[in-house]
Image 1 (cartoon, rainbow, N blue to C red):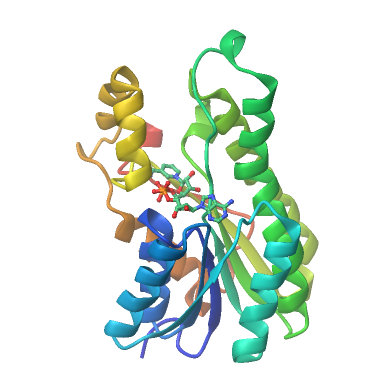
Image 2: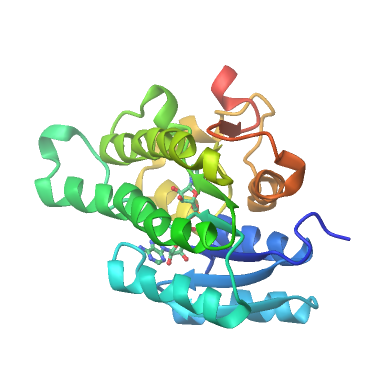
Length: 252
Ligand SMILES: NC(=O)c1ccc[n+]([C@@H]2O[C@H](COP(=O)([O-])OP(=O)(O)OC[C@H]3O[C@@H](n4cnc5c(N)ncnc54)[C@H](O)[C@@H]3O)[C@@H](O)[C@H]2O)c1
């Protein structure tokens, strides 16, 4: 029996990369999964991969920085399977990188919207669905850029440090009502998003590729295993924590 047997879950940004691996891992561990993404083609592919492996999943297309979309995706999970037990808010999109004095206000604002406000919005609708059922578990995906900061990636780093405090504050708010809320901070993980960033910022890429003490990039499945554990009853006394899954990048 899987560690998430019988649970109902949502994974945002599950069309590719880390989000897809989390959705697959949730399903492998016995959960029914609502896959949410902007991209219908890749989101449907994730569902197909889960179904082909014997799991159960549904896709909802939407932008999780849009309140109506978030409301509708949480409602779809509850309408489909009767409740919501677990959620991983993984969707994020940086709108740009570079020195602050060359950044536009628009890029800064949009990056906060797509990395921090979206996470808050998802929690705003996931939490009442969990409260209606007596509790649940949420994992927000942060980034090691939030720990020490990251030159030329300031909007993203600031947004992700906001995700950390959002996680800790909400854990304190809802622990008494049976909802555990944690965050996972990935190091450098081999995903389509990161491959694109490496192409755009080759100098930063060389530094990032050497950031783990384990001397390699991480794989999306290695993040997924940590998220599944934190969402499971095996992590029943863990809340308000930020777990770095980074091959030791944060201790280098
Ligand atoms: N890959 C890494 O090295 C790394 C490191 C640290 C943190 N992270 C974090 O992990 C998470 C996943 O990263 P990834 O590398 O797999 O990303 P990715 O860019 O490869 O995939 C992100 C997915 O999320 C979707 N998405 C983005 N914003 C969305 C929105 N508003 N609404 C709906 N769908 C949306 C995209 O369509 C895409 O399918 C992100 O939160 C990212 O910041 C990644």
